[in-house]
Image 1: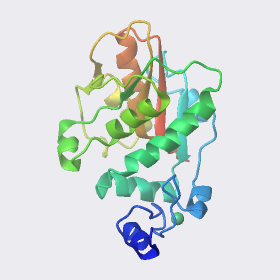
Image 2: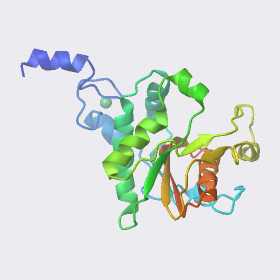
Image 3: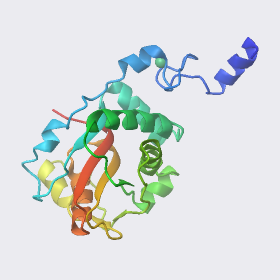
Image 4: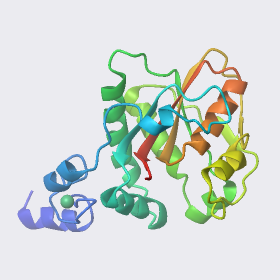
Length: 227
Ligand SMILES: [Zn+2]
């Protein structure tokens, strides 16, 4: 292609790095510098979530995996995705997460199905797209695992912002989700954008266990470990 045509194509976003905006993106969506600097999480269970002393259920998720740490580069990307309507970033996140999952499971069997963390209709309408479903669906495609749409629904959504203690947030989330359908004997991975306390993920796991799921794993684009 003529160089100037390539430049024009790049101007329209095709080849721009998602982090720094230069026209040097490779297949991953980042230039090689930003790709190397991505704050990747270790291919191991997110540690404090694997040992939740404050959990209100005795059946936690089996594995907790996240592809990125919650650092400035991750925050900036998530901000673009959620609030600047850059839904194209879903593919970038999905590729990062799918690659991370392959690394994490190695010889462990992958789950039977993938479900996205539900969103309230209100925030769906405000945002214009279902941020976790887009990523979950693409991760399912990449890993050749069935994507189960509408597997979970929020039945009681209260604002979380005013709840500062982790314990209060846990109480508020617990039993706030309903699993639709029968998951008897299945192992399911729930995909969320960011895991912080783990409360929302545990609510999802609890709902799926109540409908017969054998194992529930929590996957997220990023893990905010906090302090
Ligand atoms: Zn870059």
